[in-house]
Image (tube, rainbow, N blue to C red; front, side):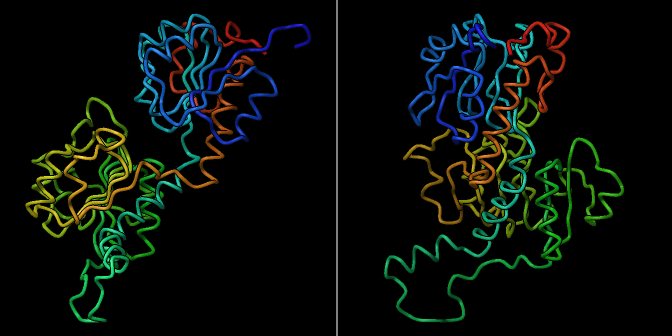
Length: 340
């Protein structure tokens, strides 16, 4: 690259240094020094003269932003999901879109189980009870009775990488494993996990625990609505570590208040961050975390490295490991986006 201008990259928030270091060897970086996502106006103003964008799932990269990226060649998302990006508009503009699936699988599966166990055994309620000084009676037989997990039935809605990883953990609890997905997994994997494919309605009726692992699409928006919640057992617990809008949150609040289901563990919400007046905050039978399912040091560092490597691959004219829109190659071949 002697004598050649280095590609310019906009990073919308500070990511782990390992990723920035990889990019900084070959590119000039502009890293926003804020924990808040940029507004559309700010992002539109910043993106005009950059060759690559490294964004987060809370950054709305819509058609207007993409049109403003006059030199933009690649959008690398620091996330597994990509519903925050207008992939169609990017593809039409010849912009490569990448993501970071796989590296956060185990962290997210672990967190789904943390929410499940916390909701089943009322951990958050009990912790608050102890800390507030209300625990004065010592041990007694009905104090914070919860639900047993061992040997129960768990249903996974979505059975990709994360759903399968969470199911492997369920085997350790000797649970009956049900799953619903657009496509059945192989007979070999079903046999390994002792997993039974079920229609969605049957899964909801039979499961003691339901864990969501699906992307947000037009088909999955409010997939779990009032009708689906009413199918569940009154003793059942719903866990969501996928996307907030796959659940009708208004219907879920009603279900939790009126006892259609026993509880929920939520890491994602229809509106993030959740506002102070949200009725979920006043319910004791729900465990809430602030979209941290992938928040282990190992996973977040690997996400940064993967996002950086995806971006550099495109600028080198090489197909990235995780390309969301392979059809873009017919519109703008890799050799035409090469800068490194």
